[in-house]
Length: 223
Image (tube, rainbow, N blue to C red):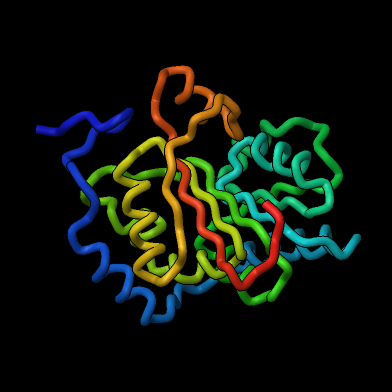
C-alpha cells in the first residue's frame, strides 16, 4: 500500500539504494540527446540580454511564474538574473513590471543547462526551487540527481541551492552531490520568508522545507 510522505503519495520509504551506481554511471558518460533549434534561439535571447552590461549571472531553474526570479533580482541588483521554465502558460503569468536585471525565458532545462555550460559565462549562483519530485518508482530517472544531465548541471555555478518539501528528494540530492565530491549541506528551513508561491503554501500548511546548498570553495563569491 502507498504511504503518505509529506504531500506525496509514494511507495518509496527511503533514498534510492542504488543511487551511487546511477550517479557514477551518468558521470562517466556523455549525454548525447540532440538539442533542438528552438533551444538555441532561447539561448540567443539570453545572450542579447546580458550583452547590455558585464555582470555576473544568477540562474533560476524552473522559475514558474517568475516570482523567484524577480525576488532574486531585487536581492542581487548587481547580477543578471535569468529564469528558465518550460511552461509558456506559467511564464505568461509573470508580472508585467520586473526588475531591469531580470529576464525569464521559455526553455527545457535539460537542454539549456548543457548549452549554458558551453558558454563559460560568469554564473555565480544556481537556484532550483521545488523541482518536480517525480515520486513514483517508475519516474526515478526523471529526478535531476538520477538523470544523465546531473553532472553537467552541478558544474554551472560555484553556489548551488535547491529547495524541496520532500525529505527523500532532499536526502537523495544531497547524497548525489557528495558522491561526485561536492561539499554540501542539508538543513531545515526555519524562517517564514518564501521565494515561490509553492513555498508559501507549504509553509502555511506546516510542511517542512529542506534546503540543500553546495559551494565550491575555490570560488570567491558573495551569497
